[in-house]
Amino acid sequence: MTSNTAALADDRLKPVSAFTRLMRRPELGALAGLIVVCLFFAFTADPVMFSLAGFINFMTPAAQLGILALGAALLMIGGEFDLSIGSMVAFAGLVFGAALTVLQLPLGLAVLLTIGVGVALGWVNAQIVLRTGLPSFIVTLAFLFILRGLSLVGLKWATGGSTQMRGIDEVVAGHTFVSLFSGNTLEGLFAWMAKAGWIASFDNGLPTVSGLPVEIVWFVVLTLIATWVLLRTPVGNWIFAAGGDPKAAINSGVPVKKVKISLFMLAAGCAALVAIITVLSSGSTDARRGFQKEFEAIIAAVIGGCLLTGGYGSAIGAFLGSIIFGIVMIGLTYTNIDQDWYLVFLGGMLLVAVLFNNVIRKRVTGER
Image 1 (tube, rainbow, N blue to C red):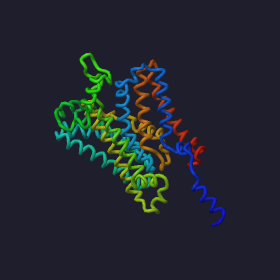
Image 2: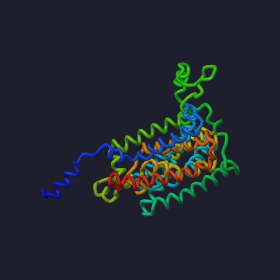
Image 3: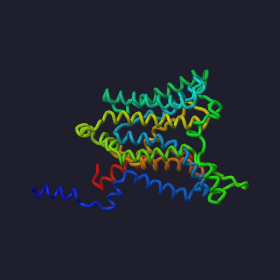
Image 4: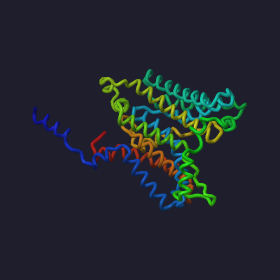
């Protein structure tokens, strides 16, 4: 062994400091951003914001966005984008609403049909990208407009001229599966905590917060599953490899095409799930459902540490990034600040996150 080879081996075996390991974590920027945002609102917002009711208020929109962001994050780690997921929410909402009101399908079949249509459209996106070699940015941008237009046309057909479909809550009233996608869970636990004095309650003893919205449960469970897949399974290694260096991954036996197809289908399936949750929660759907959510989901993923070049990212980071969005979106209503500053925040957080990912980590860790 030459001296140069020995030196290289020594570098590979060199212990890594705790600080360096910390800086290599994709979700570090999102965690720092969450702390800063919480401190900001701690000094500027009504203290009610950080009560249990306030927590539920900002976690509900964060969860709906976060489910989209998880799908977007895994797809970005795999080296691709899907700009159609926001429009997919509207189109899947149309499919779900029409299945219930026009076709009069049982709720369970309507859910399966909606998820199936979303997954199928994700497969179509993937096939076009992989077979033509076109950038996924362009292909899914086209589908952003196609699906939004189909939502408008389809709603007018289904409702006789309106771009909004109402009365869905009446159709699903009493169905067993509604509680899986709408309403609150753990109501008994919240009632017990109120009786024990652990959480706020009304004069009659009922809790001021009756339960945990089911979308938050979906958000947490999906984050845990995505994190386990990325960090503890061969599939997670394949996702990172497919996004980091596809050619090297193929040479190593990684089924890159199958991985990317699956990720496109997953992202579209997440959008369909959000559509089902929002339709059942509001009892209606409309053509503007999910408007610009594709950009917010991608920004949340980038804030969470996903590189635009692929091969790096974290489900936990997307989870934290989505919570930041929810805190700012709802937190502004607890202050005297104009809510239009939310748009400034979106652009600012994206810029800061990209700078962090591409400058700070390079200088500290030497990574790409």
